[in-house]
Amino acid sequence: MSFRRWAALRTPSTGKRNVGTAETFLKLMVEAMFCRLSSGGRSILRECGINASESDILLTDSLQLPFETRNGRTLLVTAAALDYGHKRLVRPHRHPVGQLIYAVQGVMVVSTAVGQWVVPATRALWMPATMVHSIRMVGHVRMRTIYVRPDSSLNLPTECAVVAVSTLLRTLILEAVTVQLPYADGSRDDRLMRLLLDEIFQMPVLPLHLPTPSDPRLKVIHVKIKASPDDPNTIAQWARQLRLHPRTIQRLFLDETGLSFTQWRRQARLLAALEMLARGERIVDIALAVGYGSPTAFSTMFRRQFGVSPSSYFDTKLQA
Image 1 (cartoon, rainbow, N blue to C red):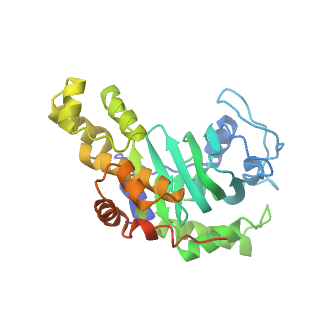
Image 2: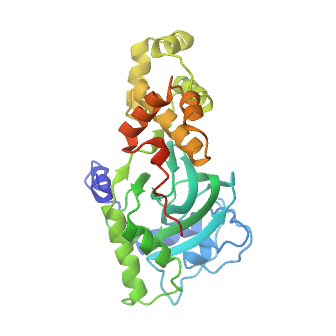
């Protein structure tokens, strides 16, 4: 399913589009809080057209953020290049603009209140404006980020999604981070940024999301399986521990995550396996660590989900 189609399916039942205005955008900018950038990184504020210092900035909703647009206008799309070391954690933060998070090297684990996404190279994550999120780096990460003003398109999704990165999209992202700001309307750089948006919307949405249940009873299962993906407890065993009927657990998982207990656990195991693959661990060790009895059984499930074997998943990683 393409990103554009996926976004359309999530239009509110009222039929109204989630379209921002310039006034809404300015309000979001004032209310937003921004993460501390790594040393040497360019300011996210500067990339969004805001004149502010490079110092550490972490603003809460109650604070006012001084800003001004460039040349009397706010750019629709901007980009930034940031590098992070292994295990670096970007603290919970949010942006007043939509964000396409892409790494030309390394793997990112992005967490929000509603779920977790594993984002390897050749993949990118769409992060809606104002959604609080944190990012954990697996390996040395070379992040390339595209910032999209909320009113730049009628179809910007309000939920996170991992999308495939085509050769064209990757080239556009790498070119976008070299664009000097501000760029003029109708210029080559302006057309490049608009083509970038079009290409994002054509990309297929990928199954790299683990929904986070909110029910306290399911959270017990969530915490245990995240810590020990090889946990062998069946739904019947969890039912006895939690003093629930197995059907109740199954219903709660479907209601809160859209997945059955078995589907959710399999997704948790596969995403844990992606992190281990990114660290270069052996297939046999990964298979056992995520609860599979043999590398063959693990590889079969991995291929069924991702279309390639575990050993070749990162072979297509593009360098820059």
